[in-house]
Image (cartoon, rainbow, N blue to C red; front, side, top):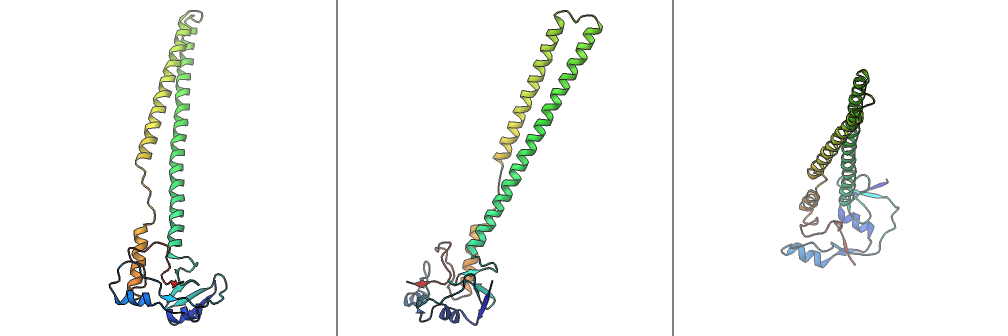
Length: 214
């Protein structure tokens, strides 16, 4: 992005808005009790033509064409906070889904193990009956039914355990995102060094640090 450097914010606002003047309401706010959000600093004059994406540097701080404080990518503090919030949310959601998928994988493996275990037990039992010449008796179907019931019971207990694990995980889920309160503190801290022209606690996110009366 192209960057132009100015010695002061006043020089920048005169460049961006030739003919603009200090807003009397802002002067009254500065000289008064400074309660609430400050009014726009300037009465807007004729806006200059600025190439899209141009940034302006004053004392090492970057601004956009609306005199919003921005980073090197041209993002305002709010936009930067939002992009970090979205990235953190996506990362947390991915981790969350990965953990759930891991639980599903563990459940599938254990279900397969249960099936194999009872299948092996049934095969061994049937071989034992065959070796004793009992394959044509009522014992064989009774034993098969017993193995099947045991497998179904174990599979049911597994599903109950998985549900409890998932519920406990979802109940304890805590996602950490960029703190909006920290963003507001940044605004206020910035304003403390610019004669009160930053954000106060009553200002809304997205309001430009330096605005113009219409």
